[in-house]
Amino acid sequence: MDQIYIPKNRVGFDIGNYVTIRILKEGDVEEPTEKLCFYGIKRLEPIKLEIIRDVFEVIDKYIDNYKNIIITGSFLENGFRFNDVDIIIVAVGNVKSERISENIGNKIGVNGHIIVLSGNELAIGLETDPLYRMMLSKCVAKKRFFYKTRQTINYKLLDLHLLKSKTFIDNFDILRGKEKYDFVRNMISIYLFLNGNDVTVEVVNKEIKKTFGIEIGKIKDNILDKKSFIKKYKLIYDKSFALILKGIEHGSK
Amino acid sequence: MVQNRNKLIELFIGNISNAIVHEILERAVGAELVADKYRKELALSFEIAGRYREKINPVNRSLPDKDVDYIKEKIMARVKSELITRISKGYDNIDLELIESLTDKALKDVKIIDSTVSV
Image (cartoon, rainbow over all chains, first blue to last red; front, side, top):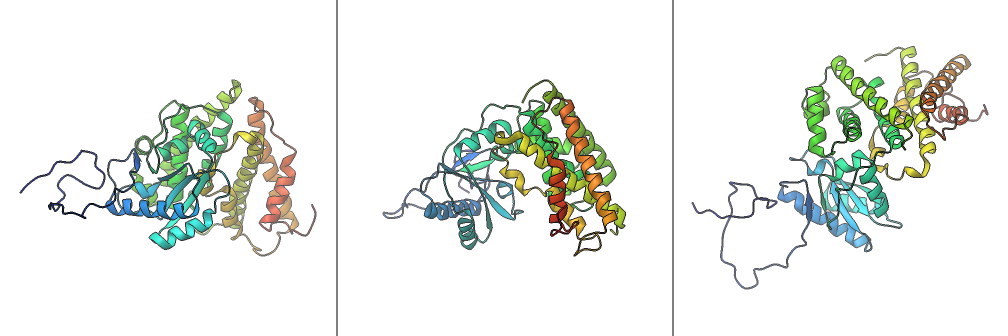
């Protein structure tokens, strides 16, 4: 069997994929498609690339003065275990996100969850919010952008963000698996950020596995041992809160 | 899982208190908070408190005065304690005077208190 060689990180092809090679004839060459910018992604299923292009096409019809469009979230994870497509539109002014979302749903059959941010909001989010850093460590953007900005610890903001994860402790029985994962992820990303670690999807998931000794899928599937999980959770929560209070006490923001 | 009324009330109090602490801190942080749109997706304490409220009888009208007094008092004490922990560490700009009005508003929103009655 013949082999063909392509760049190692070519999105859409895996080693061992079967392909057809044929000689190009006049008129065979299509218009070059727009190049996408990939961050933290080694491979993406071809169907997802099609979906992303469709999403961009819909947004292009509604807005022309945006700075960027970024796709992130569970849609970019391997497989098809996602409920919607997280879309960040970087733009200023009135964006009819509900209408765009509805049209995306009609076009691709999956809901588009749109967040509209100004360039400044995105920059501040990346600098001060571990969850933003994590989400944007793995994304596909229409245009190139710098996601590796400096990390600035604002203890009051982190206090506010961490408080959301307090809900987990008292409400273990009522929370769904996905909700539990979101709370754990929020807390761990803050804990890592406070300790000066870079916060990416991989780093956070690895830390969750290490801390709780459990696969991410089991948290999402809500198969947890309540007693031991809450014990470990509370330990990290209390450590993070203590670091935040210490930071506030020492006069930092 | 069947939970008794008292347990549900305690869980409700915990979540509403957390929501009020969050709201007061959000106001204290003010303009610095510009980018929290991701966490809007997290199940919020207030929403979860609503899930418990739906299981506390009477569901569609306000609770008896005795329950209201207990719940309100406990929420206010919890919120104050959380905020004072922060103030003691030098956290400035926290407005303790918001506690009562935000508690009343929250209790009206979930029909613990009759919304037509001024408290």
